Image (cartoon, rainbow, N blue to C red; front, side, top):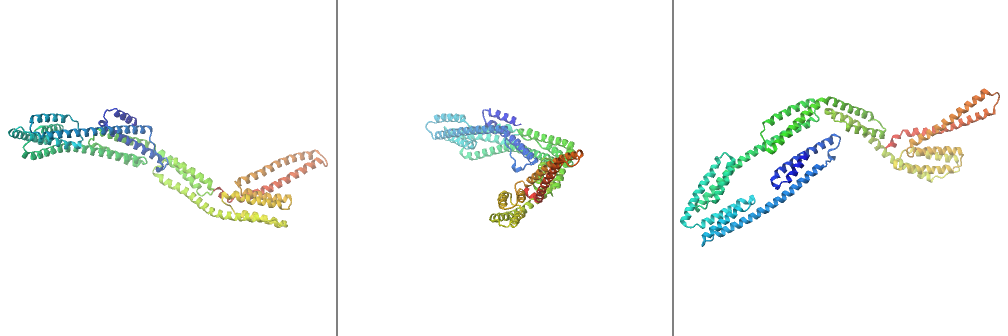
Length: 578
């Protein structure tokens, strides 16, 4: 369609006069604007249907749209230039006609050479006829001035009183006869013929000379009244025809809009609604048949649009009843499944994981087509489940946020006290004090994520310094620092992952030792079955087995400490995922 409009516009631009095709160009422009509006509304409708927001919708013109705008701009520029040229020519013609009138007025003052004056008048009248058109707004005024000048000249330059009286009388009779002819036009049934005759009669009136002064005002008034009556009849005739056509066009456009509204309603209509809409459209079709014709340029266009709308409706109806039941059943099943999944998650307190899961469900919901009459009911259930979770999550973290700031203040106070703490000579007191610091630290709870690393490093670095300064056994210091290590891991980045990795490391070490013990046991069984008495090699194997079992006991003890720390971490784990 746009390609056709472009081709027609390019063809119009080839015409020598823009004014001759201005109406056709305006018609093409209206057709294009209607087409573009339809494309825009459809794109917007599809965008919203796919889950977009109407206020975010953007629609850019295509190359064909830009080409049409360029052609219209070119035509409008050309038309403006042409109108300016015409206006200039009309102004020039008006000036020439005024000069002619001025010369005629000058001739009317001549009294010594009447023949020359009459000859000059004839020349000026001939010149008047060759001058081009003037503005319609100035035509009546300049024509009246010209007529008055002619009449004044003819009146004042009559060859003699007798001739003048004769001429005036004859002119009066001619104009009276002409006046009757003009009055008779109201009886003319052929409008085209009436238009042709009125132009002839007006020209004849101008060519007839002056009439007696005492008759002129009356005759002029009658002439104007007769003309107004004749033109009124013509105007009334054409107005009635145009009004009727415009009324028919308006009525047909109204029926088209009703058809469009029905098609729009059908987009989400159920089976019963489709039947009701069908009856409405048939009523509109019957009403269309009773409306008369419009203007030729609009009649075919509105009929084509109306017919295409009707065809589109019945084609949609056919498709709807073919697959509506199956399609809607599938859509409902998909949305009910999403509702069930959302309901299953709404009470979950694994905030991060569940948030992502619900967001994915919401994205999936947008991709599922409209569920018809059940759409609102289904969406209300789905939204309620999502809102239940997110409201609970917000309340949870709002409570935690207020608590974290208090914990941070408590831990910073502990860091200050630990930095100021000095060891005494009493080993047990030192041990108890450092252990209490660790206990107080763990009891202080979690802090905001942005401060976690800073305060943890400050506390545990100072704790390690104090343990290094204590005069205790290597084994005891190792145990203390191992617990400190676990506490540091618990308050570091990704504590759960770090502790699990540590526990897995100890489990792997114990599995390797168990493998060696199994090998030693196999070797020991072999020596027992093949040797008599005490075997020194057997004693060596037994010592190795005991040493490996001691290692397993130590590793198992460490792993228990790791698991204890991990279990303490599991309870508040969800707050670390904020």
